[in-house]
Length: 405
Ligand SMILES: Cc1cc2nc3c(=O)[nH]c(=O)nc-3n(C[C@H](O)[C@H](O)[C@H](O)COP(=O)(O)OP(=O)(O)OC[C@H]3O[C@@H](n4cnc5c(N)ncnc54)[C@H](O)[C@@H]3O)c2cc1C
Image 1 (cartoon, helix red, strand yellow):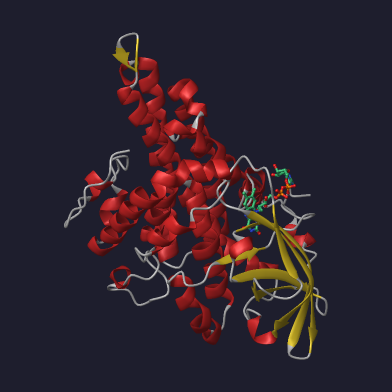
Image 2 (cartoon, rainbow, N blue to C red; image 1 turned 135 degrees about the vertical axis):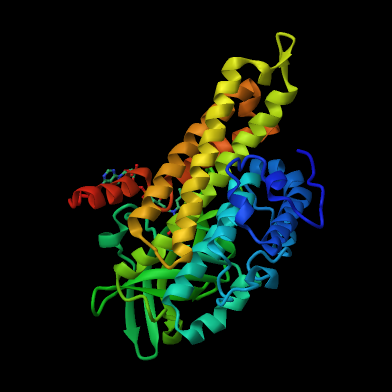
């Protein structure tokens, strides 16, 4: 991979060559500068150590800390002309995920559990005092955070099935239960845990310290997808949580669904970036590898696959960007987030398969980068609502009939 040449004035068209319809032209100069800083840090610190971490199934925390220094959640440049200093523009958010996932999907997922899932839960569910307490430390990456919703016995049916319990005792809540697949749980300072209140049977949310007595995390072993990022199995036995750690605006699963409207959009953007990463890696390869005395990229059949991959990246970006524009206007619509996640994940999965094909045998080694995208795409296909669950949300919207059960 060629290193990005740093420039004072950034031409979005040059910076994002696979964004043929030039969605990135709407980014501000300040946003492009932050994206350039991110990319430089990713190339300098993450790229050189990715493969060894992938093989050892370890997260490159040192390299990540260097990337975090580009302040892609809280650089003042991101808030110029904006009223809300808590959230960057939604368009910047699309390209933040594009940048992270184009480098590596585990890195992008590490960000999404923190800056996506935890942060969205806090902004939606927290009182002003709670937001003031935690948001600055989340935005500066001083804290590492994650999101505990899924359980061992309840994945797709978590809405009705959520079994972790919360019992109020004086100024405290007592939490009992298990959470599974929780990205980054082993190192998290704070975890948002969703639990059912024994008193009214409604789902509530709690910001729980990762060091709480009675809370233990065991990492899921032998993963073949998103190998670099640990997914934890959390067990909670009589975990005591202060009442002021309950996110006051989460009072039923409807509120969880509202949070997922934001975070499913994030995963649609992440899938866009992942597709672009696989495509760009495949394109680099076919431009240099020769067979039959010619570059692979000069064969018609290879070019057709490149064209499909390019079209997929464009289609994914168009879903992401339009969704971002609507969310910027305050329109968080469930069917739109589900449709975008479903569509982009499907196109992402097709793209990684095509990328693997054109890279041939080398496409199953880490050397061409494509294999990482290929295996990582599987986790993204399943998390934040599987393909089927998002399709069922769209189907319910279209027909007025719920077909979940
Ligand atoms: C790598 C990874 C990271 C994750 N990170 C987190 C995290 O940080 N926090 C968190 O809370 N969760 C996380 N998850 C959990 C994720 O959201 C769940 O895996 C997902 O919701 C699916 O649940 P499940 O795996 O239990 O599958 P199941 O619900 O058991 O589903 C298995 C299959 O059956 C299908 N299915 C289920 N119900 C129906 C139906 N009614 N109709 C048709 N088909 C159906 C599903 O679509 C799927 O194909 C993560 C998962 C993975 C794999």
